[in-house]
Image: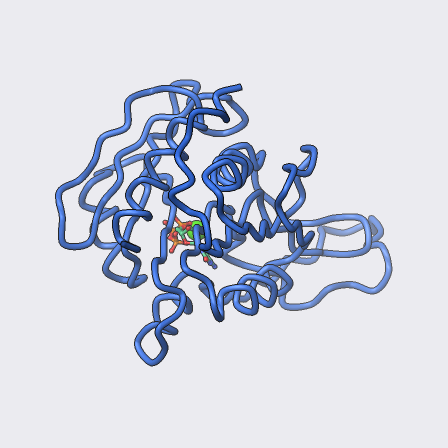
Length: 226
Ligand code: CTP
Ligand code: CA
């Protein structure tokens, strides 16, 4: 659908999009994961292709068809996503971190399936994962790439204040703050958001298809690249 009629304003640009949600193995059959469907990231990849970009899509655990014209790199864990995103971003014009990245991983991954035993289960000890978005923000302190860094955030409380603090903490240019709850965001075709802009006013995106939100993000990215 609405893929035609776009200008090729991203022609000659290389953009990286992460989508879906990372999983951290507990044992060979179990993982810690999240509810991200990948729909928003895939909409970003499709619209970027339609606007002429060369697109690398780093896809974590989604059940969606590959977007035509994008290079798809499949990953499972946060460590794998980090490797794929950082290497694709070394010369990228823009990186959009739409993936829901697991904040924690089990300190120890059991080689064999954990079995029930008569007593209480062992607790699962967690370690913090690296913050890929913050690393991308740091990369730019010493290198010209990636030229534009975009983060996503789902907040339930103090949306604007939490979002503004996150934009600063992670050194990104744009932060798309989703309003979660009320049947929005996870697994639905629609989204509503406010985009916080470094050095600019926030841009409200009313409830609508994830492709419309994607186009607003690329409008803002294209403006910063030109
Ligand atoms: N992100 C990331 N690496 C992580 C965690 C998050 O790159 N280890 C990215 C996400 O892809 C997203 C942005 O950071 O673009 C914000 O994610 P979010 O979970 O809202 O932020 P956190 O810093 O993890 O804070 P919170 O405690 O609110 O979860
Ligand atoms: Ca998080």
